[in-house]
Length: 365
Picture 1 (cartoon, helix red, strand yellow):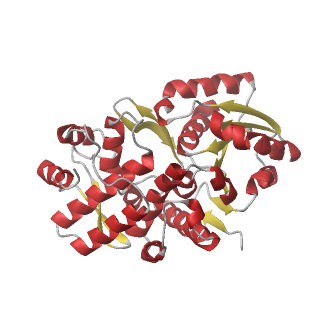
Picture 2 (cartoon, one colour; picture 1 turned 30 degrees about the vertical axis):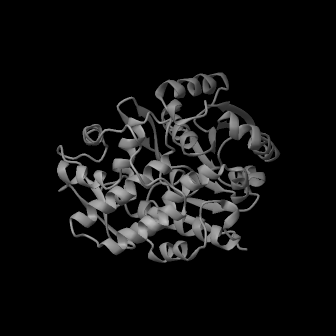
């Protein structure tokens, strides 16, 4: 099976997404070719570091890097500015310079915080993404969005800061918990709905999608390549979300609200996105942007993946509506929703009333 390289064609900071089996053991050699300085700090969390940290550090040292490491606490609830302060202390102790590199080894939380730390330490040092979850591989590691959460909303503090390299080793998914795999599939479905109808059809044709071991190696590679290519295509056209890139937030508007209202502990990010996609689909039906057949197809695919499709008990509709006002996509006081128009295409609308939102949520109880 070929090991594809996808290029993110940005005017100032282009980079490659390399998908390579056992790529983790060649991390140092991939980085060496990019002239990333002598010092490299591996940033991870305890769970991922216990599984893959020693291999990653060995790969760095074999290529001649002076390698150190720093661990963030494990969990979305620790995605805070206070956690990043710990990195700053470690970077100072290790004497990281502007020519140094930080390597994010982990899922989306590790990648987002490490990227934000890299963007702000010494006004910016080199940054490499080595995602270990499906969600991070197909979405969070690509595009340069970095950040931490604020108590009032998700990712309200952050920066656009592109990595120098994204290295995806599909083999590390073998130790990913099934629930985390399903959460990543939410982002894959998202790409099928908003950008890649062929990917959507391939997912529909698969017998099962709720566990990694149910996917053939060929389908897994197709999921990784097509999802990464979709993200690269959109980001290359709109790096800082001036227009088109906003469609990548499909499912995230209500998804983020539900995630925040459940304290970032009840739902994984991808699970919240699955719920958000169902809500956005119902809004699109109510506005005659797409039909119930499309809504049914999306719902069936989300259910086949084993993702939740209903609003969690105890989450108040009024609280969701209020939380939407803190969303990053609010413009001139109006919430902007990404809504599907057909399989493979989406639009952005700020004509969604509170009554429409409540009606959509009522169908998901």
